[in-house]
Length: 243
Image 1 (cartoon, rainbow, N blue to C red):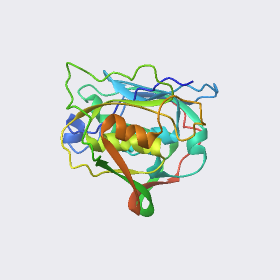
Image 2: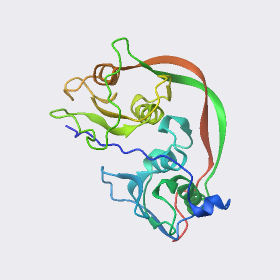
Image 3: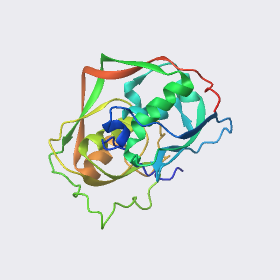
């Protein structure tokens, strides 16, 4: 039985002095090392109060945080998922926590000699639309943050954000890119509990992902096949450069 996972969203926004001057901010101090613990737990890259923390994460996880993409839109070698890493660091004075993306991009290029490019590839995608019964999500209210579903086993997505941010989270669970086609603006609270696509019958008392999205959020995923932009990893070292 797996507990519901709480997913926090990271969005890029301008504001750091270095960026205003045309120079992206970089971490003042950063440590990167290979994690060989074999542990199943991990901490997705976060930047809070100038402190960077990521534990037992894959390169795909790092690329997701650095480029704001779902895992299904990242193309590269198989070790992007198998190898694990720990990262820690400190951002410059005055750089907001929301500058994680450009700083993490710079760190990956420096320590892993990362080289990437973007290209358009035709692939299966889902369009996120409002279901026939109407939306079942409330606008985000800081005084009443969303809570994780009770008495549910399986996977979960709990948080607040725009529809585009939610679509990005759903893409990781659906296994294919998800495009926001709801036409809804603003931030919404959401609490979703579902059985992972890999779950066997009886493993979870939660509904499958597609049923859960409709029943719990009032949204629906429409399957299509169309061109979509992906991030292609041209080069990345499996062992990071010394700290």
